Length: 80
Image 1 (spheres, rainbow, N blue to C red):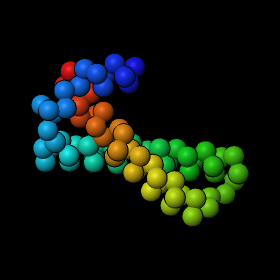
Image 2 (cartoon, rainbow, N blue to C red):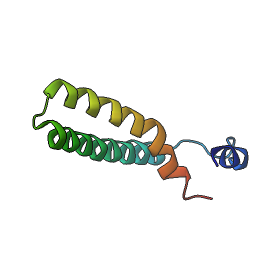
Image 3 (cartoon, one colour):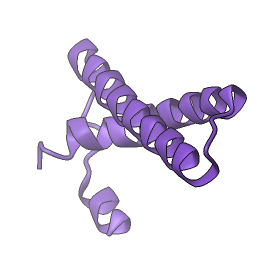
Image 4 (spheres, rainbow, N blue to C red):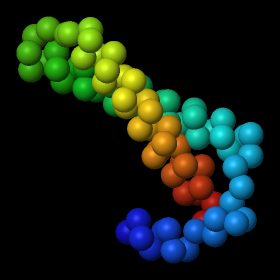
């Protein structure tokens, strides 16, 4: 599925503007925070305690992954 989308994407006409970059960061951060909260709740439910180092690492990684993956999909996925 990703290969089909990548073949149809015209990289020359899709320039990153300040507005689209802000939307990418906002959508990716929102997704990352929701994912981090869900993983923290799952850890608390299964273990009965929360490790703050684990929460910090999960939050940082999920926000970074959200910005790099979910952000562009949120911005450019609706333009086709």
